[in-house]
Length: 313
Image 1: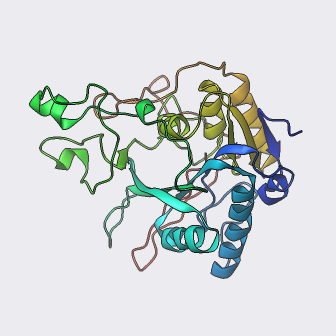
Image 2: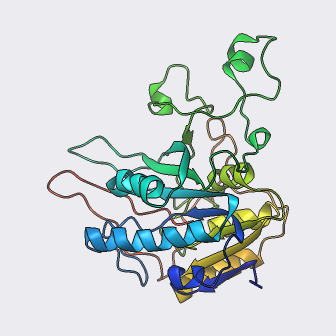
């Protein structure tokens, strides 16, 4: 029987192959984006076909280990989003429930293209008619409630939906949270939430929305790319079982230390309502970095292309 509630050091494909068929309720993956990011031990510059074949292998294993009513969320950048969505649906047989855009602040600044301030989140399921979706766990206030005071408004609010929006400061009425463009700030270096040992870190509040809507307490949450450990940390706080794989021994040590400091039921870090509250900082200063932090990001090329690395869970 598989031992859960742990982070394992090693290759994710080999690790996934040790798991039984249909043993996981929810998988979240934020893999390397193959854009030349300087990771600790992984080389993020594979040839296109090599990267796609590798991705096909680990995603096939993810589908195998998911339960029949399980969900798979994939975070990916622009470079491979279209190809991977086609692969997930047409080759691997997943059904896409939502294509969510995560809109963030603290994005990269470009000079010959529009500044990138988003990542793609694909919500895939094995069975389009049978999957966990806890709508009441993630409802947001509706315009009927907030703007019009309409008595017909559902007191529970509404589900987030998808739309194309500008930055909050560009909208006279502000940014609406009830969109499938999710607005969460990236975890900047000064944030108290920042772990410091990994250059790419997703917000706990974003993972919290995914874990709450696609799993129940006591169920198994899997992350094939441990990264900074956010998926596992959120799963533990929200009373889920969890399992992660991570190639870097140093990241594994840091993730384990992060998990050891968490008690189930702890509050998630970050701003639950980023429109009206700012993330807290650690003594007003940048969190110190260790030598395992990636040394640089992909820089803008002569074509004006500039990319962010994957915000590994």
